[in-house]
Image (cartoon, rainbow, N blue to C red):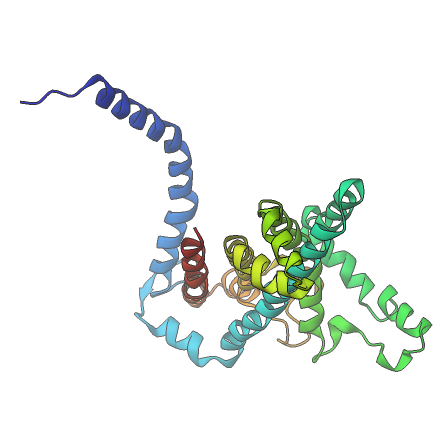
Amino acid sequence: MSRQTPFQQGARREHFIGWLFVLPALVMYAVFVLLPLLMSIQYSFVRWNGIGQMTWVGLDNYVRVLEDPDLLGTIFNSLRLVVFFSFIPVSLGLVVASIMHRTATGRFGATARTVLFLPQVIPLVAAGIIWGRLLSLPGLVNEILRGIGLSTVTRAWLGDFDWALPAVGFIGIWVLLGFCTVLLWTGMTKLDPALFESARIDGASWFTEFSRITVPLLRNEIGVCLTVTVIAALAAFDIVYVSTAGGPGNSTAVPGIQIYILAFTEQRIGPASALAVILTALVLIIILPFQRLNREAK
């Protein structure tokens, strides 16, 4: 019989010690993430008010969610928010980070990055309250529009059926732009400067450098930005709840708010859980391609 070498014994010991360090985090993750997820899946197949006895209903809760235009509309609203919370901040972040990488250096660059990142530090509830006042009818945004002669454009942005969702999306852009910019700028600092110098010697323009060198080499960082911002859009709750509470009507209602109303206001745990499971599946379907992008970029 072969004996283990001291090196193999040491490796097994380090492996065991490593799992001991990870064990507390795994226990917390199992208790506060996996267990609630499994319980939500269980509740999605029953009729329950949170107190009485559960009644098995099978897929009825899922059918109700998919047949109810109000519940289904919340999913479409969250998909529309993906454009504001994800695609616009990532696109603008690429441009801003590229400009900062070329021009904003030293103390000025550090100050600019700090100012851009500040919205990420502010609690989202506070951001919703602040922008709720700024976008109100007598708010600062409308005062600026009146000051430049655009009084006909002013409106209660968060109370308008057509503009409420874009206004919430604008808040999301303000919050997430700094995160995307700083992350992408950090990725740009790791790129080899010789690539850009060679491109400039060959007469490449800024746009050519940006599209042919910067963007392809930042696939990993772009994938991370898209993953984080898409999840923020689909799981949006606090900003929407504080600024509009899903109104006017259901024009800004998102799954997070509807799940809260179904579970804690109407005591309909089954449909709330079914909507939560559908939202989780939707997040995974959208996020998995970005994860594949990250793997291919490594």
